[in-house]
Image (cartoon, rainbow, N blue to C red; front, side, top):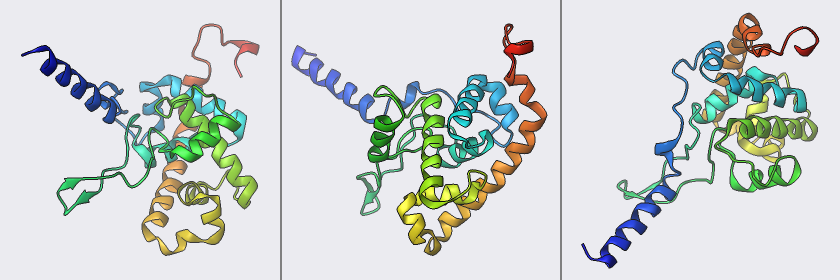
Length: 213
């Protein structure tokens, strides 16, 4: 293989890695996604991130995790499937949604400008949970939806606050079904978390007495 061919091969490999979002290096999602206790036992830092977001923005931990499960099944680098020309040829993706929270490019840019960091990444759970908290707080202010209403928070999350206020979801039975699933999952997660949260709240050696909150 001459040097030109080797260079072309290297460039091709780099492009393949870039367009795949380096998915081959992404962490494995939790095995037992129906139980939030098992999720946090696999990924205890996720509890810390979700709790920080709850304290900052007000969305309950269970609701945050239910939305992420619905959006990405806890896969860090997932994107929407590509459309196919003639049912065969891979084509464009239907949206720029990416990462745990499936945040799209425009609103992710707004989040980074308003509340996040220029270094925030959609593939990091800390930033995904904070984004969801920020977005739901904006939903509360723009639509009046309570942060204790996971079904309608998800409808606004999917449709955007403007679309939600216009009732765009009413003609989309698939979106309504997904929102009901989020509501049911958030309820289960909340019940489960009541029985195991103490495992994660004060698990470090210095978190005793007044240092445990």
